[in-house]
Image 1: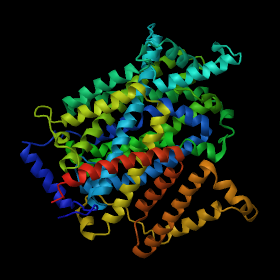
Image 2: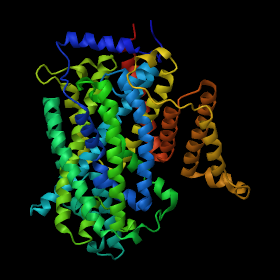
Image 3: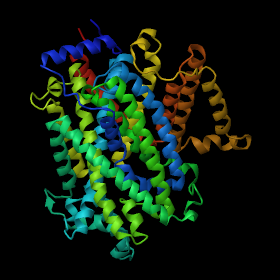
Length: 570
């Protein structure tokens, strides 16, 4: 009996199993995605809720310097993209990082990674659906129609706003003097009908768009591809207009100071910025629908990251050049708000309309990726067989697609945007760390290197990782004068957790420096692993706590069901 929790599936086994599955099912999924289509899928996923919503709060926290954080995170993603491309060219299966971990790190790691990919895709789509709803409601309001507030907002935001407004009014403030978000939340909660004693506040537009997108993904990849390509072209045209028109209204003085809240303010936006880039790995989930996945997926990942990074940096600089960054706090539609501040209400209306289009394409891609990961996990026996059912007519994973719609649509009714962004980002970074680590382990076997049609440029990490560690430690360690209050300053309250995470990060860095020196590891995957780990340390104690609870739930399911049902458990 193969009872090891770290049992692996060889690359040859994965490929042969796929051929056998296609024979039993009477054919494969439809292969009609090329480099352009895959690049557009990546752009659709990356340019979504962040550029139309989260970029505002990120800029409020870090100022114009957030543009550099976008570049830094893009570099981290580029390192990771090399690792994804390496795996995709070796294992052209739809399981994305889950499949890659199965071949290199073992089943239990693959399972928990797949479990966290559920978190990444489903929760990310909840965030996109919420953002879509906000822009859609604004668009409808602009056309002269009003949707009741309690049908367009999540319960938690409405209740918090109601409580905040009550406190403010009890202190003598007028409701009209409070922020727009607080007034809207107060109105939603106060006017909501009671259902079993609860105020019925739910984001109905978010549910409806999720249902519509789920149907489109259900009926076929060709229809999904064509719709996505159209939406992405429109999205890019609007962003070019935003940058082109906005550039004439930039006031350079608004860029000073460049980082008004210091490095801590910039790093406070890590979650939002990481959330911006999570979509690039969705390209790899379509491997079984690509005409040439081993050639096209690596190219598409690189193109998508380059295009989107340039756009994010330009939009951030224009946004903070027009509106002082401090004024962007709490603004859910920053690009439309930016143009209203300079009197271009017509352009603001165009931005609001285009945001609906842009967010629709992001929703489309995330909704496309999750079912394909579930399908692959089901084929391995880790999920019930229904998740791998392929529709006989549409050639799509039918049950998985429907379940994805349910798990996105229901939480979108009640979830809070900021909460889901933070939770999604840490799950994404975890997946990135394991993919980079998986490449390092996979490449220890020379036979695996021969099977890949994509090679990561090899740079010997022998000395570089240790040298970078020494330099970083020099700047991080406190001065002699600061040692006296070092423990009291860093190891109390929530700061204790943050410092523990950072200390663990440096310990892992030491281990990687040792193996880089002794085994001559490849520099790019090591850097990808380290940068993503560092970004994880900046996610805060609350997000780590929720992440650990999510992982514990995953382990419970694995040991109670998946371990025994695995096809390797024979």
